[in-house]
Image (cartoon, rainbow, N blue to C red; front, side):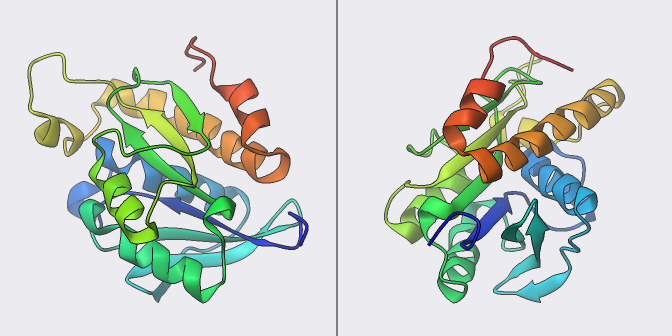
Length: 197
């Protein structure tokens, strides 16, 4: 089946509820929302402990998903969605925050381990491996010695929020590039060390 005819799953990782909106750990949700807004795909249907939406992006059929099970239990909802729609892990893109990337950078990987990220750890356990593409959104590390959990669950400050608007636009464009032209083209285009905002 050609890429145009397959269904692709684009899932952003995060935590549900107003408490976690605009927090660093919800960068994946923010990117999915940007894709959804641009391509008029409401991500509102509740299924498999996730919010999902189905639509098309430049002719490709996609399922957009935001698991509502909290970050460290993201694997089961995404696995359930993939099984239901018969989506191969090779046709999945997972979007998540990354403290090991400088704030403002985005980076695409075709597969790999969890890098200490609990959402990815849950996914790898659910799928029995990490054979899925990821779009990492850099949030950096705390400059004032906050613990990792406190830092990623803290909200972006006012200056960061302004910058995040542009970063999320780049992440959205990276999603479309990966979907339409493949992960390698996405890496060539977006994995540059310089931060473009």
